[in-house]
Amino acid sequence: MPMSCAVVAGPRGMTTSFRPGDPGYDDYRKPLNPELDPRPTLVVRAETTDDVRAAVRTAHEQSLPFAVQATGHGTHVAHDGALLLNTSAMTSVLVDPVRRVARVAPGTRWGDVLRAAAPFGLAPLSGSSPDVGVTGYTVGGGLGWLARAHGLACDSVLRAQVVTADGVLRTADADRHPDLFWALRGGGGSFGVVTGLEFRLYPIPAVLAGAVTFDRSRAADVLAFYRHWIDRIPDALSTAIVLTRDNTMTIKAMYAGDASDGRRLLSPLFTAAGPAVTDTMNVLPYADAAMGGTFARTFDQVTTLDDDLTAALAAEPDCTVEIRHWGGRIATDEGAAAHRDAPLSVILDRVPTATTAAALTRRGHGSSFLNFLPDPSRTATAFTAANWSTLRSVKAAYDPANFFSTGHTVPPTTVTQAA
Ligand SMILES: Cc1cc2nc3c(=O)[nH]c(=O)nc-3n(C[C@H](O)[C@H](O)[C@H](O)COP(=O)(O)OP(=O)(O)OC[C@H]3O[C@@H](n4cnc5c(N)ncnc54)[C@H](O)[C@@H]3O)c2cc1C
Image 1 (tube, rainbow, N blue to C red):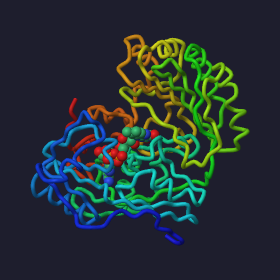
Image 2 (cartoon, rainbow, N blue to C red):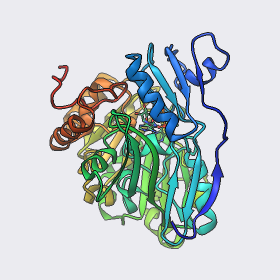
Image 3 (cartoon, protein in one colour):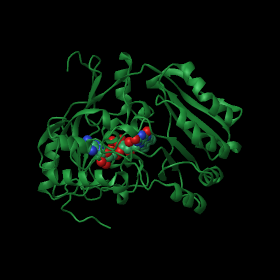
Image 4 (cartoon, rainbow, N blue to C red):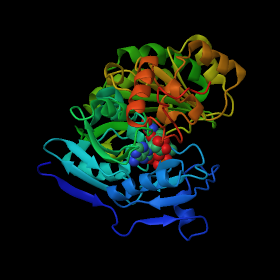
């Protein structure tokens, strides 16, 4: 990696492991979700790739289920009785500004990459929060605000170092273990422990980004307008409409291009929404564009926003609803992750009313997205049938005994799938 520059380096020291009752056990066992109170048998806080390999060996020797956690943002099940590998000490970012590539260690958060890439005018395909872990986000697909312009994060991965179920450290890229490489780009964390990830950066020093808030009363009309407006906008423009519990409607947007073009493109949508209450749209460094997200109790991909669905979503009481536009480069790339042809997604922060649920089912794409799917019994719905079948074959080749079987799991073809 020529002209690389070490920007962030994590702490160095002895590997530590914790059993119940040890000081430190509570610090490293917990995920972000406060409803989960996991009781792993052993927590290993790795510092090096050799520590990761040793943890995999230990789990085999002690017949412990194995789980990995970096930040805890995507941990949906309590890893009771498991060996929980904590990678939070393994943080580093190397940026090669010439090749426009970053290389990170597995505990690295997006904020570290944003800070490291920004001085070179480069941007990673990060998501809504700088606190999310790069590795978990990327192996789960990675939908960021630049995805319509440059694709899902997993599609920009160039190389992964991964400790597979047999404890061997492998390099997966287009030439070496291409099947594993394909599976790691969106298939989730059940193919091995990624110990290093190399991915593309994009020359985007500044963006037009922010949120404009309106009264919610015109929501149904705005969604009906949005249905057709999204067909006319370029891939460099990403938008979402958020209907909030406090009766406001927020239009979030990011345009990776000339700001005056962005404002002109957005103008019809803002006009349809009426007078703005607040407006934070501004030109700012990509690294400073905090777009926020909506907690996903339910996530659906939909084929269109028909009248029934727009009316139901607009009338959904005591609920935050986020309607997001996909498409663009997401639809044309061909990685393992996601249902590429879904033009829109709908997130609700609580279980929808029967009317909305019925409208979502009617217009539902019948699919989900791994990173926004809290229910591991529905993992298969995050993939097309063809990709799911290929992922299961790759899993059989690298992890036939289903060693990596906690959380979202792709069962090997030899294992009968639970109904
Ligand atoms: C506030 C918030 C904002 C979010 N915004 C977005 C967004 O904009 N776009 C988007 O796509 N997603 C988003 N997500 C979802 C997020 O990408 C996933 O939850 C992701 O799994 C988080 O990864 P993590 O490493 O931070 O979490 P962790 O809980 O530490 O890990 C989650 C899972 O990632 C896998 N994993 C982690 N480390 C490794 C490793 N070294 N090797 C192999 N597998 C590993 C494992 O399967 C693990 O169970 C958001 C989540 C939150 C909570």
